[in-house]
Image (tube, rainbow, N blue to C red; front, top):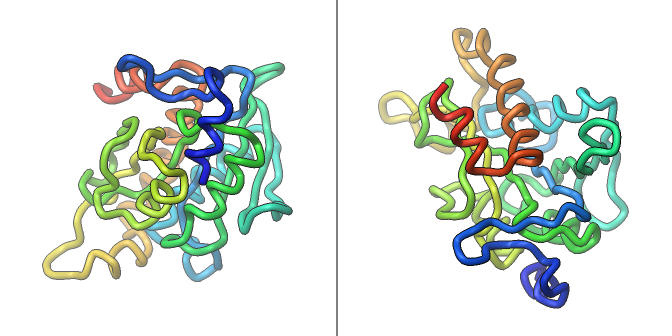
Length: 217
């Protein structure tokens, strides 16, 4: 598992140190957009991670391609000239098995867990709200649960895209696997763009400064 490989890297591994989140500027950031592959899922609430990853790739004119070592599409890019390197990831295993390709790519690129960012839908946050956190529970999200298991740690960053709870007695699984409503779609492009901004901010500024910058606005 990636957690074990990380320990062999030693002091350059990254992670938590006396309450601080330690990163390694020499290593890339693994930005994982969680979602399901296939056109039938493209507009689903569960696929906001894919939407954000695709927007980030478009900003830097990077193209996704199938990776040779993982069941995933990957786009490599830099944030500005000489800036931090990003490895944008869309797992192709379907949501519940996302962790396998993420761990394989973390090993391939030698990325510490502290420099993994998961972008995902969040039922516990209302639509229109975006939040960043580092570590903690998965909130019942199967993609995050798979990532934590495969990485061997929960200590990675998350950009949480609020989709809200389903109305009435609708099954949450059916709700996240359905498309956004008409009113929501009017705001969706703005929110995806803002979530991409938050990913860039985590990479360039860190988790806590990003929280201070975006959570109050």
